[in-house]
Amino acid sequence: MSLAFVALELLDIRAGFRPDQPRGCDGRWCGEGGSLTVVRKDRTGDPRIDAKTDELLDVLNEVVESTEPGEGFLYGTRIHARLAARLRELDLPGIGRHGVEQSFVAGDIVRHGLSGSIRTDVLLRDGRTSAAPIRAIWDIKTGETGLSPRRIRALRAGAGVDDSVPIIEIHLLRGISVKGRVSVTVAIGVVVA
Image 1 (cartoon, one colour):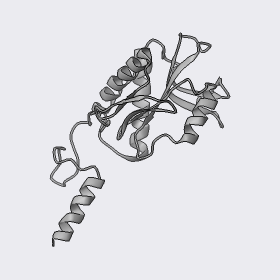
Image 2: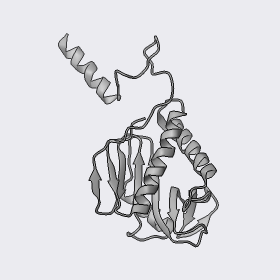
Image 3: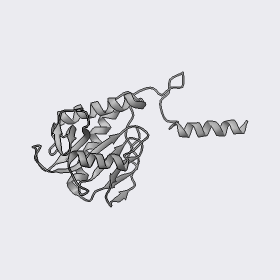
Image 4: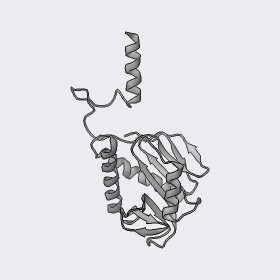
């Protein structure tokens, strides 16, 4: 009998069970959207980029809190679409309306979704025009996988930037990590929806 309870506990841990989650009479998670708790936050050392990361986290938190809980591909698509719409609405300096869900081929901006293009979730420029240099690229992850070295290379090649431009992953399960750069980790949390 004790083995069954151990197995159940392991399944609960693997499924991300939290006893404080509101549950209906059928045992399913119900109620409002989740909220973000940051448990890991890498820094780039660039105050402008780090401040923009904090600002993006605030907007992402707003989006997650206003979105029905979910999982899988459809949940990820819903979070990305709502985040993109909210960021365009805010028209943040350095990001603007065009620094969201931008598609590239070999450094050139192309039509969204063009075959063979690479799409960035959010990018920061040193100005408002598409000719302004790119300072940072953010990739939002909602599923189990993170950014692979291959995807990081593809983002850099697509956007036409070198290794000096940080690729910053904001992951709803693991937090913020700066890819391909030496950075200081501030252990504040993992982003949990």
